[in-house]
Length: 487
Image (cartoon, rainbow, N blue to C red; front, side, top):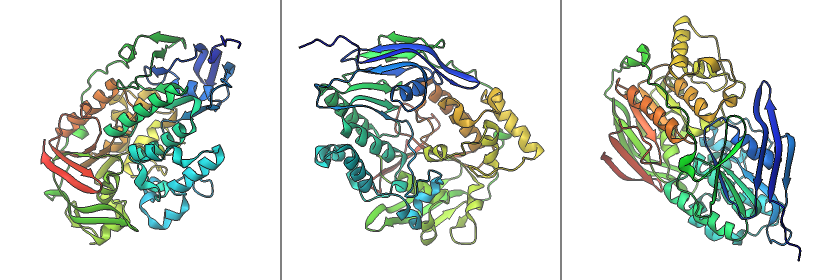
């Protein structure tokens, strides 16, 4: 038998340019058999671009050679799981408005989870019995009949993970593997990845997370000159520079005017989709100025509960819900409600207008739109400029939002959320995909905003990555309130 001495992956002088930006320039990297990498470091260095080039998903100059092992009973493929996933409807359209997930008449416009998995199994010649136990372990068994459009961001992540790990490719690349996953699911994922590595699957995980599969034995980051630098561990990854604290714009120091004491009052709420009960007997009162943390495992009903408050859910009219002093169904429109709310969520970010510049992204917050835009007034323009300067985005104002590093994208989305100084901020997992420095900066801004009369609902899985202003907690599990106490 001839001993294989060639590397598993060899990259030589890889160059990728998105004019006018040079993303990667003459990058070289060798991955040997048995090496399982974490690729970390600062946002915007080209990690995702490199991953897509290895997987053959984007054109590049240079050479990417992958030497699959014909003796392994594994698929001779590279499989890439992206940080975000946009599905198509049955007509192949990706341009979904994220609020459509709650409208039942849209329900038959996308495949069910079960049909999606069956289609994938047929394509790849797989047997569902091979992963049935894992689907249960990772908490994905109860969504098989759900339409893809109904899934939360965490459930969408699980769908892509289940498909990728089921395939057992010889090289599996996962971009931000823990994004949107609850604590238990992250543990299950790491155990599953360890099992696959023992079978010969090699891993490249793009993350700055510290809790990793035990099989990870290599760490690297991309330097500013496109050199790939190997380090001893995740703690050695360079971080984004700490931002200097700036004075909050004066308009955000104004306490929002309210002629009511209760932001939201929900009494004995039940939400059902066919036979599936999503929320069961939920009661929740949010007083003006309170700071709430909303938590729960993936699929526990958090997104549905938020949709009742922000006006997106059509079933809100049939329930005992009072928002901003008005009972739902008493004549107020969805836009009357949205005018009082600043919101950021993974889904909103996913489906945001791809043609929006940073300037237009922030300006759209005045009109609660994610694609439609009109000219702003003089005072509104002044507020946009103040926020661009506050978040160090002024030099990016004319760039397309989706071309920025994720951390800067999220700050632009936060600027959009607060631009009209609303009484209620709803921040649904706002720090997904951000590193520790970016998360701290984001939450420091939230804490500062909270000092000026804002009411806050904050959704977050990581206890160590929350704003310090939070004073109340509500936890859902399987659609029911598990606890509702002060912190």
